[in-house]
Length: 163
Image (tube, rainbow, N blue to C red; front, side, top):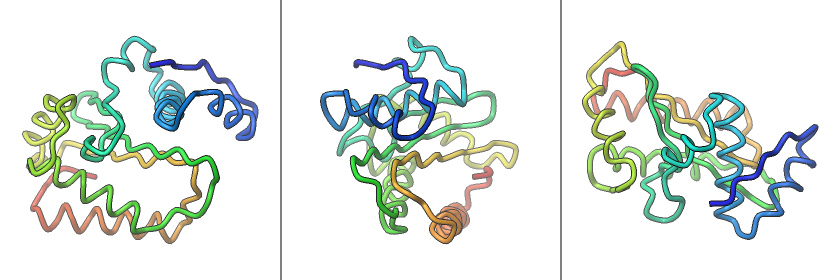
């Protein structure tokens, strides 16, 4: 995994630096790394241990960790050409995450995280934050409808934690 130290002044500079990565997977990893480092101040060594494989068998999980009673799950999508994100692409990933939580999908790198999350599903004092990290534009309507979809998913499963 080749992580880049990126300190952009604007999105174009950021994108140019990420584009230096060899392939889409590395670009996605570096997008995730940039976000996790900026928001959570997680060192590179720790990031490498919490980063889950990106690909068709990741169960909707590209990065995961928890702090106290908050569970963070990051799904990253790097697109070379930015466009409007569709609600269906987000809900598809939420369905994959749901299937991973209930055991229908697997992500062997995230087993401990998923097991801890499962134990917290009935805890109204626990928090589950799904971060959709994308170079695509997510408009307000799509953001609101995605949250409504997640709320309905949580309600239909009778999960008590906050999402």
